[in-house]
Length: 152
Image (cartoon, rainbow, N blue to C red):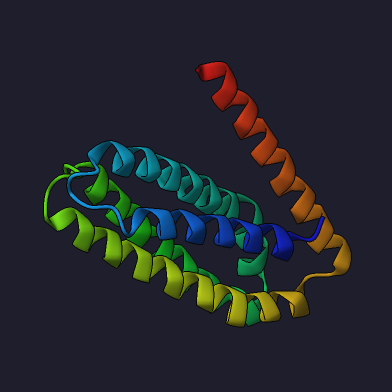
């Protein structure tokens, strides 16, 4: 399984959640909470997978080291915003502003990843590595889904 296709699919899934979440209002607290929980779950899992399975290999290569370090810093900014949103009541007027800031951060990260990091990564990873990392990501996601299902 191609790692780049898997990660792009995650990006599309997150974008779709933002599209549903953005038009909600302060009165839609239940919908905001549900969609935000889904968004947070997707972003947390995606960041974890990238940081443990994809980025370590890219940090090893001089050609992709700097952009990988930058991506890890961007992940931290997203995590900080997610935490701030999680502790802000959905009916609070600042919640929408925080969501917009999160969306802009995620979109910037995705754009850099897909347009800069991925092409550079294709240069440093063999096709076998691309497929192996993709398979590892797929397995990690399956394991996460299984443990989420048993936790409920």
